[in-house]
Length: 93
Image (cartoon, rainbow, N blue to C red):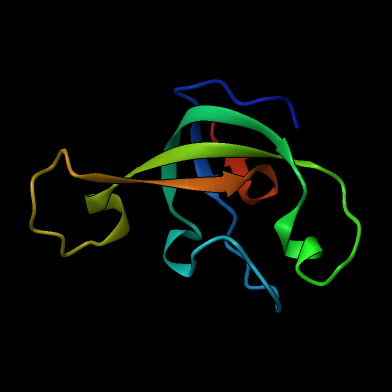
């Protein structure tokens, strides 16, 4: 994957593989915006089983609360940020 620049809109892959997964279920299929690239790290999803794996990019992604929960009644500017491995991210542009 080509590195995603801050501001890039993304969608989190909607997938439900078995095992140790680092991506919260409530973020899968949701859209957000890349905030920062942290670098490449061991893939925790394979390392949890003692398996080798390619290093994966990790990104900080911001999600608007209203985009995560349709009944969210808080301020429109409320958001959460999550650190996600690149193989979970789909570029929207």
